Length: 429
Image (spheres, rainbow, N blue to C red):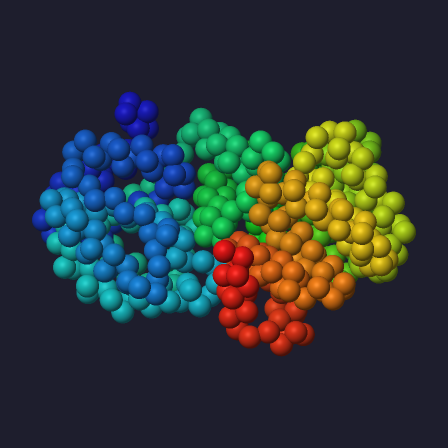
């Protein structure tokens, strides 16, 4: 643990915990990087019997936070210190009701923590500590000390490299398209922690772009747009043309989703120009695909199909399987709109096969939904409902905003009962 000598607050925290043995005290440890937190906790375990609790997967409907801690101590009664992390996941900025539930619970049940009869260390990233101080002042003001562990450059870069590996799989599928909603929320918090420690402009541009992508997937277009504008500004300042092209394309998707096709088209044309000038084949494939959707939304299926065929050719040439799955799905939509159901079915079957192979759950959901729509068009109601039920199962687990919205509209249109999807899923088992 020699590398931890650079954290003077570790010595202070260790000394304070020694003095607080056998009585309740509340301490905050500000640490943005999980890797550093793990090392610090491992160091403390050399001197104390720790009860370490992760609140990230806590079911708020069942137990209050203090009850979780008491339950953990029943399993580990000889613990001298409680170390808790993951509270930031119960303080979701985007879900105000959940944030307020957590805040009220911590304020109202504050006295229950005294019965822990040992020091409690809450490990939080900077943004969450600031949020807690603003939203739960009664609980926050109870603290006996705040200890800060800012990462050094080597640790920052190691954490960023690990995040980059985790965010995109070897098959090229972004994390948010593979993961459940809880994992996506955790990744949002992870990026915010990395941003708090990041000082290199290129890292900040990359992280704000990825954060925007996650937020957009959850339907928060306003916050996503703000982060993308921030990323674009940084990319322009440092001359990162690849980053500019990606960010412009991502910005277009927000305007597209909100029906502002003119603005979306302008961003995409800029993105395509950059990709062509620098020879970014991946960027060209993605932008051509996105361009097609502007024309598709406006009923110009011939132009949409031409862009999609160009996109598919590029993506096949560079082996972009995730991109191929997306483009095939969009080709199916265009064929469907033109009444060519056999071609649409062939494209969708290819798309579904690819997305299943590479673990692209978001892509699977879209393909299943479109298969359902195609079945409805051909008056095959039962197969359609099975496809829709499978799509809904994926959409609920990932909280895919656009797919959930489409399914909700469909449920109203068809006047489906509340439990329709469960029944159809059961018939498939």
